Structures are given as C-alpha cells and as structure tokens.
Image (cartoon, rainbow, N blue to C red; front, side, top):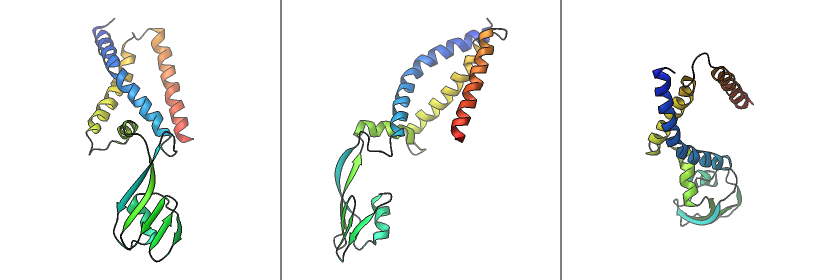
Length: 168
C-alpha cells in the first residue's frame, strides 16, 4: 500500500469517527425537514402581535408572516381569519400558530442556516468534510484491487440514482 493510500486511510478513519455524530444530527434534522409543511410534532400556541391599525386584509398575511391567510369575515372593526382575528382599531392580532418544540426548532434551523448564522460555518465544514470523505474512499485501495473497481460502479450507480430522483 502506498504512503498516500495509508495517509488517506488514516484521515478517512478519524474524520469518519468525528463526522458520525454530526451526520446523525443532520440525518435527524433532515428527516424532520421532510415534515415541515405538516403539523407533525408541532404544538399549538396563541400569539398576540401588534402590527398597526387599519391594515388591509390583503396585507394581513404578509404582516403576520402567515402564508395563504384566508379571511373568513371582515367588518368595520375586525378581520377574522382561519387562525384568529385582527382588531383594526387597536392594530392587535390574536392568532394561533403551530410550532415545533424548541429543541426541534434548533435542529430544523441547522438546515436553514444562512451566512448570517454561526451554523453557516458548521455547514461549510460539514460539506467540505463530506466531499473529502467521499473522495478519500477511492484512495484507500490500490488501482488493481477489484474492490476499487466495484466501488466505482456502485458510486456511479449512486450518482445516477441521485440525478434520477432530482429530475423526477
């Protein structure tokens, strides 16, 4: 085995152990993200927010950060919508939201991290580490080894599978 193969093998092994914990957390948060448009594991919470007086019904959803807000009834003082109501004179909206528990919100935020979040650095490190992890696997075997050749076919199958799933 060449010196490069041995070096990659050592880095691959210890990085793999280190990434095992991070990958577990990403796997859990990624699975949680699949259900983000449902009420799975969400808890109901009553919210009261002042958004200013006389907000038109068309702008209410944007002000309250509620997508697809449906107005059920509107009179001169109140707008009633499916989640609650808005008092036009006081500018106070009382409505119900469904949120994940705090720990699960933090897990979900892991996948939504932007450059404004400290989690951004973890995501960059994790992405680069996974790239190294996947490339270094091919340097762990000699070029004549049958396992390497089979591994290349399996890796190609993985790429084809991912592309097909993306295009569906």
